[in-house]
Length: 136
Image (spheres, rainbow, N blue to C red):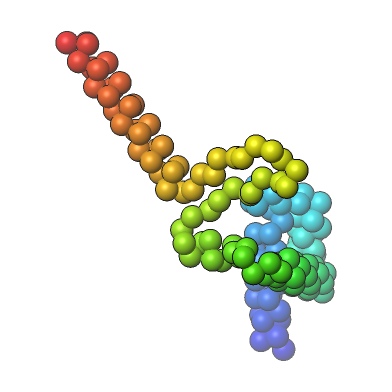
């Protein structure tokens, strides 16, 4: 009998910590109301409420995974590349201009941003050296 009380206390503690990570207001945009309910259930030792909250969160997570799979279906046009192909190339492009747009948009890749960043660092180092040289 004592073993089941210990195991249920362990389960209560594990469920509390698992759910607290999800609901804590300071973590991942948590939910204050759910955290209050969680604290009350833990203080009362109400493992059934914690199990129900955990099951509800698992259901929400499964629905989110399912909706992501549905949203990531490949494009119907064989000329379009999927996001996975773009990631493999190491380049992410901005969306193409719409068909009714007469002007073309510049497309920047990750490599372009790296070059811009390197140029900015170079300029900042030059300014810093100039500043310190002017102090002496």
